[in-house]
Image (cartoon, rainbow, N blue to C red; front, top):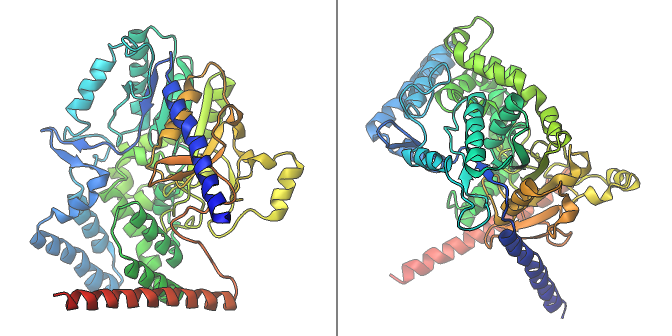
Length: 544
C-alpha cells in the first residue's frame, strides 16, 4: 500500500508541475522582442566554409591525425621530457615541443597573439544570413507575439567580449528599429552572459527591458579559472564521480565493471597514492610550464575564455600563462594581454555591481543556477556544488553552499531560520539562496548540467525578462529549487524525498572504520560485477 501511495504521489507531483511548465511555455509569448545569446556550442568554420571546430567533436581532432604523424608528435614531446627534463632537469624543450605539437592540432581554431582572427575563420555564412534577415524583420507579424528564438545573436564566441559587445549593441538597435519596440529583452547563456556584462559596462541599460541569466560564467567558472592559475588538486573520488557523470550523459560508454574497478582503485588508495607520488616528484617542475604550453596551444588565445577567470585568480593566471613582466611571452602576446586587462578592469572587477545595477535601473532580472554534477576533478574546487563548469556560488551570484560531501550544518540552518530566511534553504540542505545578490529572483535546478537548457529554464527566464514588472520566486508555480530528470526532460519541485538525483553518492569517510566499511562495500560491488561479467562470457561461449 505504501508503494502504491508513493507511486501515486510521484505521478501527481510530476503532472502538477509539468502541466504548468508546458502551459507556461505556451503563455511565455511576449509583446517585447527577446534576443537570445548563447555561448561556445556553435561551430567555427574556415574561410572556405569547412567546419574546423566544434566542442562536441573535439576528440575527432585527435583521431583525424594520421597514425604516423601522431606517433611522431608524441615522440617529439616525450623525448625532451625524458632526455632533457628528467635526465638534466632542463624542461624548456619539453614545454616548447608540447605547445607546438598540441598547437598544430588546434591550429585552425586558435587566434593570433593579439587575440584576433587571422585566417578568416568564424561563424557560418548561414548564421550571418540569419542575422542580416533578423535585423530587418518584425517577427511578431503573422503571429502577434515574440518567442524566445525569434532573434538569436550569433557571434564568434572566441573573440573579446568587449568587441562583441559593440556588435551586440548594433544588433539591439536594429531589432528595435525593425520592431518599433522601445526596448528589448535578453536571455543569456554561458559565455553569452560575459558579452552581456561587457555590453552593460559599455552601453548601459537604456535599451533593455529585462535580462535572464542561465548558467552564467560571467562571475567566474572554476573549470576555466583554476586550471590556468595553478590551483590543482587531483581527487580520486572526484575522478570517479566525473566518469559516472559523463557516462550518464552519454559522452562516453563505460560498462559497470569498468566503473566499479575504478571505484575499487580509488577506495583502495591506489589512485591517490599514484597521484601523490607524481605530485611529489614532478609537480613543481611541470605545473607552470605545462600550464602555459597547454593554455596557449588550445583555448587561451581566446579572450572569451579569459572572461570566465575569477577576479581572485586573474593575476596568477596571467603569470602562469605568460610569465613575469618583460618575459618573451609577455612581449609576444602583448596585444592579447591588452584585451584581457581591458576586460579585467572594465568588467570582471565590477561584475557584482554591474549585476546589482540591472535592478537598480528598473530592468527585470533573473538567474538560474544548475548543479548536481562533478566539476573538473583536477582543481582545488573539485568538491564544490557545481554544474560541471562553475560552482553554484558563482553562477547564482552569491549563494552559500556546502560541499558535495555534506550539507549545511544544523547550526547554520537554524541561524537562517531564526533570521526569517529558512525558505531560502534548499530541501537537500546544500544551498542557502539568501546570500545571493537577488535571492528572490534566483532559481536552482538540480540534475541539470551546464550545457542543458531545459524547457522549464527557458520558460522562467523568458517570462522574467519580458514581464511587465519584476517577478519573483513567488510568482511561479515552479519552486525556487527544482529537480530535473535528464531522461524524461521533466522538472519537478525539489523535496527531501526526491533531491538525491546525482549519478554518484559522494561519501568521504573521515574515520578509519568508515574507510574500511567503504572499501568493503566497493569491493563487494566490484566482485559482483566481475562475477556477472564472467557469467556473461561463459554464456556467450556456450552459445557459439
